[in-house]
Image 1 (cartoon, rainbow, N blue to C red):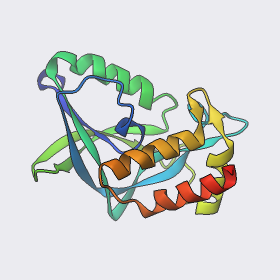
Image 2 (image 1 turned 90 degrees about the horizontal axis):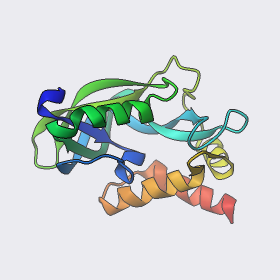
Image 3 (image 1 turned 45 degrees about the horizontal axis):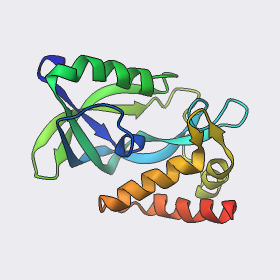
Image 4 (image 1 turned 120 degrees about the vertical axis):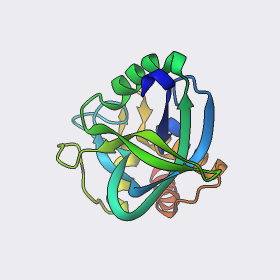
Length: 179
């Protein structure tokens, strides 16, 4: 994979803070997964005592997740892969896998994806929107408040023209709780 570079799929914070150099950025769709606040954050957007929630790719047969795919060039592939693993695998709540994604132009490419491990203690399962909003509104971690993560992700999805009704509902609910 690294000899020729690779593609990586972004659906949450990678939309607005990739943290690595890329040669191309294209809107993309990943089938068989849903974007969901289904992982407790005990590092970046919460703590062990007061966990937040972060997005994860949660397997679901009939779902699809719209996001972006970044093409990482060969010359920075090894460095980028190390960075992504350090960032995304901090607590082993995600696992790394490659899946086909469809780029906005209709081309299919294999992309590196970080998928929630449903057997990991940080996996929440399905939480109600009320519970999600309560947690997101009140938690913060080493990289800032949890609501900021939600708002930035929603803002970037909207800028890309990607509708996500659940995300939009959460923004309204969290905004009301913070008011």
